Length: 114
Length: 326
Image (cartoon, rainbow over all chains, first blue to last red; front, side, top):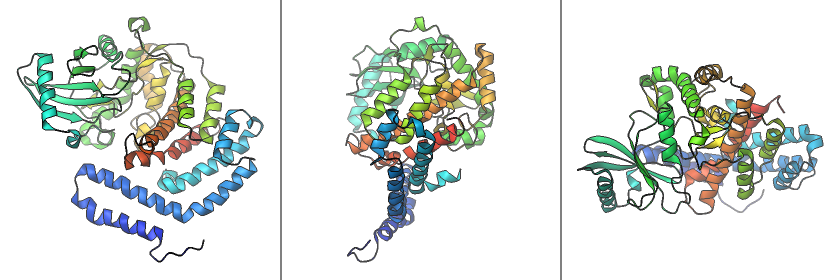
């Protein structure tokens, strides 16, 4: 997607902050702040991944939803709840599972290796 | 979740000194010292202190929390009478205004609650071996209590409860709808109705060198199907990264064998599994709720925000659990 910004890119900026936390902040703080620092670094890495692969995932998610005739997850959830998907639950489960895998690819890809 | 010291939570020394003085009045103690705050639950403050040479723990309702201490002190007493390892209740302040909010004081039990240490440290080798035996025994004893002996415990259908919570949070999760569908279609015939601890897992168990020294955190105790406690103990999040199904420490067979030995009641593995599925769903919904605590501004915290992105771990766990079972 075209945009007017100079380098560094948004992911490169996030990476720079994350590496500063890791290199300079973490060794200088106590255990409790280190725990919160690690959480912060994980969040930055998560957003870096979302910026990288999120746009492709969005296209695929729209395709899944349109296969099921739903505008968004809200409509899909509501229609499963109302029993309107009962005659195609196998298909629904396969597509919902694919979206869960996509979410983990951004949120915590290591979780998929277990 | 870990019980670590949080001196930064302590607002002023004066506040702590005033509480120490109130505590010494409540206990009739000459000296209260070393008063310090531990991390507590959402609705409780937990403090540890020494009084005349003995160590105690104070649990006090967080100001502004609805519901008070409820039945916790009486459940604790009942559990002790039936041989469940619990801290000794020293003062039931559930109807007292001596510390402004309702409270209770128990004798401190030494040991470790942090899962990572219990799972790895050499000091807990024997405790790890004995874990399933102790957990099965403690739960069997708890579930043997005649429910007529304790009044006022909540008696709510857990599926309905978490259905309502999810609807209230208003965050769409197709996976959770699929799982609610499965839960309704496969609900076990519940034969027994007992006291359920409601949060029996590492983090809420004081582990000593030889095993479970005390079952803590009775805040969520309620009436229900006793298999709820066994299923919750096996939820993947409570394995803390360990591979073994029971708290990352032991096998289903060892847990069930001990439960059967101490209760004389056969464990229906399918019922436990159903509760494990509900427990996994429940933890996912709690994760949404934690993130909303941040998003709504009740408590701004990047740690709570991060938990919102862990919901998909629970969704993934649910798909793994139900593979071939739909």
